[in-house]
Image (cartoon, rainbow, N blue to C red; front, side, top):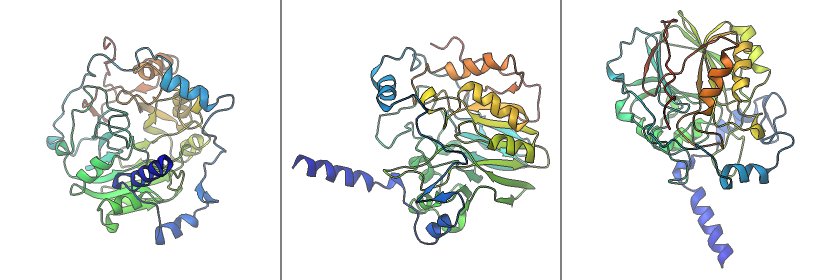
Amino acid sequence: MLLAGFLLVGALFLRQEKLGARPRGKRLDRIRRSPHYRDGKFRNLTETPLLSEGHGWGDVLYRNYLKAKPRHHPTDPIPSVKTDLLRLPTEVDTLVWFGHSSYFLQLAGRRILVDPVFSGNASPLPGTLKAFPGTDVYTVADLPPIDYLFISHDHYDHLDYATIVGLRDKVGTVICGLGVGSHFERWGYPADKIVEKDWYEEFNLAGGITVHVEPARHFSGRGISSANTLWASYVLQTPARTVYLGGDSGYDRHYSEIGRKYGPIDLAILDNGQYDEAWREVHHLPEDVLLAARDLQARSIFPVHSSKFPLAAHAWDEPLRRITELNEASNFHLLTPMIGQRVDLGDGAQVQTHWWEGVA
């Protein structure tokens, strides 16, 4: 009887709308034709274990869920500013960060939103991975109409059901990897608003923007299945600059390939946070961010994937502290804005403060 109860609860959980939908029909047929899909799963360019050699699940679970973690959460609210996004001049190339890997871009007069998470939770289980106090200063209502919504992959800290549903009437076009559109269709987005692409495809957007869909070294999944939708990174080339949207990734050869094809990259947005030696193949350590930036021939780095959700065992501010220290020897232009702070991408001399210093 107890087992039957657990099975019933599990079945009901997996039927939740927030989990999205598995690809089927024509969408699944296209996935099966992808050269990056084999034996029922998408594959990275390089063999990629979920745990690095020498690490076990017992050790990882202990360090992340049982062992005491000093300064895992800030005791002070995370500082932020509230930029009026509705009144930003569209002719100025601009970046505004919302914490973690969510950000707003204006490029070539077009408004772009990337991996928005405004629900305050990075998990399908309510109250389990709550955003740090001070980080949820923006809501969907604060956003202007969005020309292009880019999604790097379908993990909950990048594809947030409540946010995506709230955005339905504001988004012109969704751009995502193969299979990810199945979630959007279940959540009420018309099929003609969804552009699904495979690695190495390219297409043009309004404003003279060319999009190149490129690999990342990661994985995907929202339920019990994994790697049945494609994770991706994007190179955006405009008449004024080239911007790299890295999504989540471990360090690999795709960075040097992208750098050779499109470099120099004016701004590389790379994940730097919620990392662990045990999953270095699928998330950068700070030193990997600098290696990736070197390979990309990047002029500036914007490190993301930090300062909002406690997804790894490190101190909440360690990612920004470490990459700032390591960059002293590399001398990339490092963008470290506060949440909500407007960054003018045309101002190469813009000074970034170390806003995390003094936050307990």
